[in-house]
Length: 168
Image 1 (cartoon, helix red, strand yellow):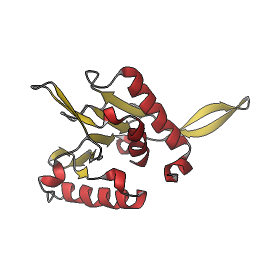
Image 2 (tube, rainbow, N blue to C red; image 1 turned 90 degrees about the vertical axis):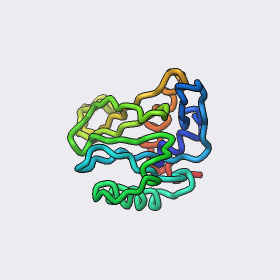
Image 3 (tube, rainbow, N blue to C red; image 1 turned 180 degrees about the horizontal axis):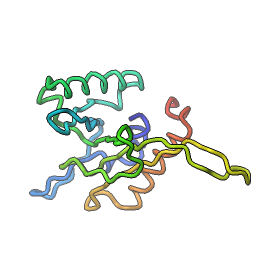
Image 4 (cartoon, helix red, strand yellow; image 1 turned 180 degrees about the vertical axis):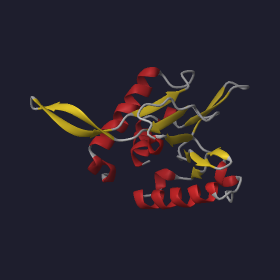
């Protein structure tokens, strides 16, 4: 969540919605982060409001609270609406490469996949490293492909150097 919020600072066009009927793009300063959550009733997307204003621990606590509300069927309409971008994960189910579907009318979604140990070459030697793929989808009517790729690479950089997540 933190990597996504930080990356959006440089790519505000990704934190947006597109109105198909009016052909209007609305960009948002606040990050209302949808968290795809599986429940017995199907997929729900509770929203962490103002994720940009929360620290890592406050975000984690809010995700836990919202996921429990969604899974128990107690999430309110307000808690399930108003997201500006969504984060999803099939990693817990073993997904290592996924194609997330944009939560319309948003223009982007990022998927976090399962971490797996893979062979990598480091200093000429084959070593085992924990690796994870990010999957993403963007509405190219709003988000240029180059900007989408740069956004994902910026997120990757934050995740590969976690200390940077705490630097303001």
